[in-house]
Image (cartoon, rainbow, N blue to C red; front, side, top):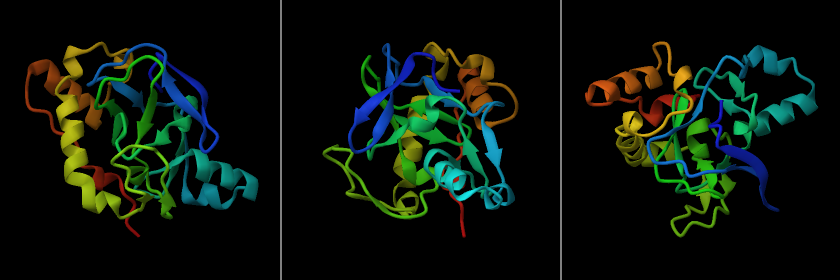
Amino acid sequence: MIHPNTELRPADARVGYGVFATRRIPRGTVSWVHDALDQIFTPDDVAGLAPLHRAALERFAYLQPTGAYVLCWDHARYNNHACRPSCRTVGDFDIVVRDIEAGEELTIEYAVVNVRDPFTCACGDPQCRGMVQPSDVDRFADAWDAEARDAAQLIAQVPQPLAPLFVGSGALARASAAAQRGAPIELPSCRDLVLRC
């Protein structure tokens, strides 16, 4: 489920729609949580889909390390890529790594959601890599992991509208519990999100 202070609207002609903040969302806020309404498609499910459905799934879903596709039920599926994203994906959730002001787009790093083919990036950031490649996780994981860990230290200090979904034994539940106790927060590496063929 995507953060409630967001909306879907046109981003630009190249990417179509994007997810934008309707109010300020501070660093350390969980911006998305995998939830029970997200649909999961196994590789066998995907193989049985009509070509049009498979194409839509490949465009709007993310790929888990198991090879299953997850199609978000809400407008989270419209999160666009940026080489310096406002949110980092950490397994079953995304965390805001820098303050997002009202009207700003929420972006993620596509290399950690298993892009299969390199693509030319046009995010416009001065630090844009130019090409996003499946191997980017291997090169940048340490920096990306550190950025997510630093933001996660703030989980207990900022409003968390998605907190009712911080349940179970996943990384988010453990991070939230550690933050509440003032303990060090451990998160899985983004390397753990990548499908290894």
